[in-house]
Length: 230
Image (cartoon, rainbow, N blue to C red; front, side):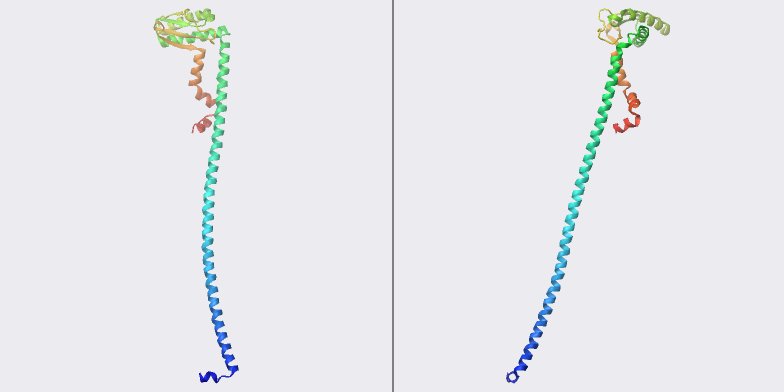
């Protein structure tokens, strides 16, 4: 204590200055440490936040990308289905018109008497071969009775020549075909219990059913049909 009192004012001021410089240096070093640590923690936190945000952005982008891809697939599928349906509809309309035109032209066949008689003969023969009975009846339009009788005579003669036995074929005048029919005949056997419908309308229906695959190939091509079936 006596030693401190022995220091001069200048010495005391110098000591205080040293102590102040030391404390300031300590404070600066501590502040620097705190700053460095804060910067490190900031960098770590920043990196963490950046990773989190990046991950969130990636996740959001991936989700949106999947949604966009799914939406695109749905749109593509919808467009493809609509196109397919339009094409199929157009094809069906074409086929419907084709058979409608054929139906409208059926009545014209009977106008050529020579050709019509030959067709009737073959239709009657077809029924006779199928039924193979001794007595048969033929239903036809009243307007066709004269030409049907001639066709029957030819059919009976050809049947006997090919089969070796006779069959009696008559016209069933009690139940004629409607006058609105396009032509052709119905051949009945077993007392009318069994018949074969060889009218033009019925033959066209059979053609529409049985020949449709071949018609489709002819009109649209085999590969196209397979593609649309798949």
